[in-house]
Image (spheres, rainbow, N blue to C red):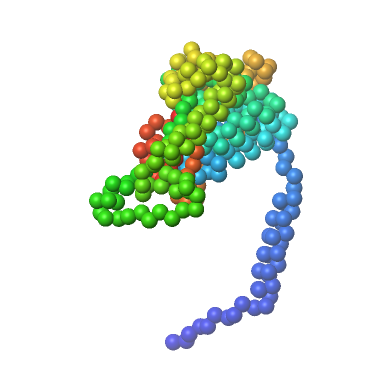
Length: 307
């Protein structure tokens, strides 16, 4: 039986592949140099879904995350798009990082174009902070809103370690360096340090909501107990302007800004597996709420949440 040996690639074939690769590389460079043409549409619809985080990191149990960097970029894009007349934030989020929530809220405040927020199921804590920074807030009557409060939680299993004869050898340079580690109880002074930080963040939250919603600071402080409110209660408290849905927002935009027919440019971030895996490296965060019961699934050693 004859055995057929494959011929080695000829010089001509290798040259053809090289030319093809170089051509594709050149085309990709040329495409990247073509300036972006703004999409047409008079309303920018920006979806904020899941926990609001600085760079897309979240708990591995979270269904989705909303990166403040991405959302801020979307707002800036909508602001620079000459076709966009109104920016609509569609919110379904329990909150997230305090810094990330503040970044998104600040981006909304900087926008020169009108901004409208629609709270669907949840717009609590950091997500409510973002909503409060818009010109008009609409919420479903049964939605969860508000939750203006702060909570700090961390795992502490020094008792379990004692049971199994495991010890924690403390070596630190700086007395508060290992504050909140799970291997020992907090001292009274350490507890006071954490409480002071929580109070400071709470004050920032209260002052921002009071300013954004044109409410008296003391009145805002009175309802900033961490309690969440149904949309119908939030309307009575002045936390939202109207009860309704995306349809209500469309009618408000048409009536208020003279837009006869709404044409959307939709911005929406999709969570990837890398977003979820990236969260495993985070060990400490300040968060503006992560939803009812989220603390049951929080795998971080230390968390500070506003909710």
